[in-house]
Image (cartoon, rainbow, N blue to C red):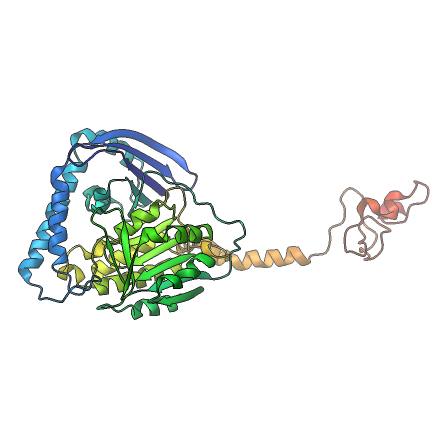
Length: 454
């Protein structure tokens, strides 16, 4: 099993005219480039229309959205319509990506992949509409159980981080609990408080001036729960930090730049319609952001946070933690039956210049992931041979020093604190060797150290 990174870089173009496409496949362990190839994505004018149809039907189904929407009755007819819209969206996406002119490119890429591989796929584009598309619906991805898809903008740059920052022993989280009308942010608070090896500071419905800790202190994770939305252009987002104050994320540009300089690694926006937030933060070179694509039912947001942070804090990678959380939401709850598509709303926005950290990487604690433990468990010989190895190690540490070879048979045991013979020990417990009186004496009167000297 290996880890691989696939980057689909989509250049300037449009859904009406097509896009230039570059596909790059790397092996993550050694950063080896396995393949880089170019092609062109053809026009697909119906794809985004299909997305908008699903979006409209989905938003009319969610019964307790983090947008403050009113509850209303969900009918079987409405659910069926939403499911049909997803099926049409999936069909349009598959027809687009499986067009004949791309077949040879995909064959080159997939020939390097194995079913057991852990695969990160990053869609790199500055086209906001392509950020909205649920790329995971492409049937080819279903062949690989350990695959997760993220979004990125074209230009990625590693952030400049202060050299004065010292890693502590705990993950530092700044949690902003914003406007909570019609939602239950207290469940988010309890999830954060239950995290192992974490120090969480809460800002409860703060005003703008109370966000100074984001500027003045060092944080690993920024968390927001409350109401948010993406502007109509799709390129910016707003946060409702309290019942009376909504701020455009761009107004916090300097503050967030300072937080990133102070070591901020991950932002989690457990709030509605957050793609604009991720789009903005990508320009600041924030390493990772997790947002919700659309309006999200309160229960989905809460369960995703719980499942993701549990997996991530226990050693799963960030990508596998997100994947596991979405799978649990889909399988263990009836949310998909109430609002089809709700389980795939969480998405990672990735700075490609930064490798996603493990939970332990955020601190000074040694990093040892769940994947490492699973790999170690495969070597069953370790478990039964461990006692033997321990005994041999103890014997090696306490066994008496060996006599120097080539000098003949010693006449006595080594004496500590005396350097008469080469096999004696000095006051520090070190072998005397060439420093002994035997080694320095003339041939006429050496000390008697070996049987041959008598």
